[in-house]
Length: 278
Image (cartoon, rainbow, N blue to C red; front, side):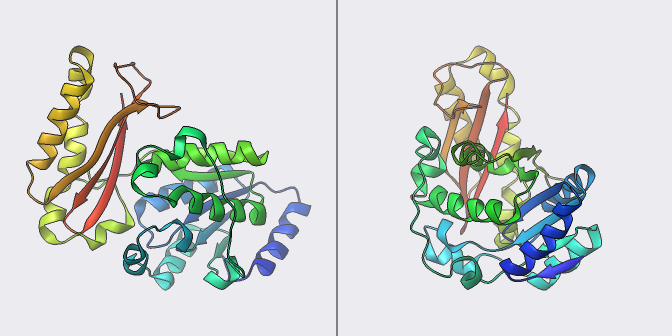
């Protein structure tokens, strides 16, 4: 594995592979790598000749400065893990390297960035568009890998590729969970002991909704799910919505195999997201 910190180094390395017509897989991360990231990297290694893992905590997608400040970082550990898996290149740039000047570009994604996370985190997805477009232009990957835990982000990145007319395959990868069902996230390590103990109730509740959705109104199922989650003291539901799996338009009735439940839950001081399809 080669670790690089500058865009020029990365371009030069990748050009040598491109001359050989190698396929390139990209796994963009914000570091604090865990088993979910490992699954993305392994999938990329199976499907490409060259795999680039980027490690950059992107400031422009944080609408809460404190969230950016406290976001877990462990670059040395990340690098060792990526090397042990067998990735080709570990790209760990500085903020100045990615943003030598302020990025003032504005992206629009129709309804996709106005609901759910978009409604609760203004500017978040514009920041995602800024960093992902930069990485795509820099790496020019054949395929890019994203976990479905950030389901809305994955749909937005697909739309970004369409808007920019890039020939990049966006590969969605299943959520990787802890043994107790909690979706793996870099933020999990910030949970206090009580919140960590109760947080699995989020997925446990989502997992129970498949059958009720077939016979009960969505509004009743939604209210029941919120009550179930909030019965666990440190958990507070910010939103829990049923949406079309492709457009995220809110649903008024259940559509088999087209319904996605997405939720954001405050677990003590840490905000967690999860989702499941039915």
